[in-house]
Image 1 (tube, helix red, strand yellow):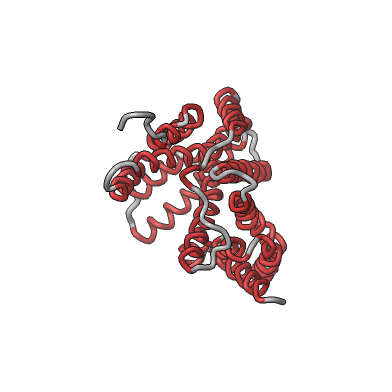
Image 2 (tube, one colour; image 1 turned 90 degrees about the vertical axis):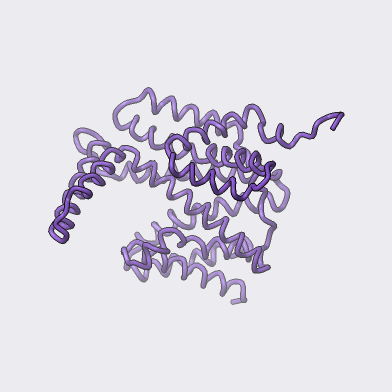
Length: 320
């Protein structure tokens, strides 16, 4: 076994161990595994090339199976770590080799990642036992039971329930979008791992490809049509279909929100003190998360049709 294969196996084993630690709820696992279990796999593929992916995955799948004692753990590993990293690195490779223009490959990667997240979300929801009142009612009932147990346990330990009840009410109000939030987490952890892996590899001098053109990311037109259809179904359908469609539409907002962020970065980049302005923007976005979400998705849509970034980059013709 050559050096690249050994490094790939080590990356797969390390990432799988982080995932198992996260699934078992250890402090270390929650702190690092939930966010970065796919990072070693991304570093292996982006640093050593796509050929090592199968070797790394084999090492990770065997590790998860041994540590968890079942083949179900390997399936979780394939769905939550391998699938998103494989999608993102495939499109990163296409941009690096020039088979897709700069930005287009990133847009395709983000869109297919969101669609894969929707597929995983749909699979999980289909496997959930639905009561007589439907999936949403069953999810709310399960959440109510879990929250009641947590409040009782914490009240017995601390004797204070007011703040816990307020937090519980907030969770109950958002439970209808909980599957969509899980889909966002599935996508974002892969994006964060791939971006961090590329940044680390570039800094260390081991990057196989140059960093992609993040600011030129563009969502393709076919995705806009699928996005519109998902929102139409979410608005018109009721019952389980409407519940699933609403959460699918939420996940499909991700590529457009990323495109909206590229517009913001391009616009602020033309100004002085861009770093400070961007930091202020992100603080404001976090403080007004719901409004910022809608604005950025809308900005991504507007950019698709009006080419805002091209207008910003266009040089004036004639004169100064």
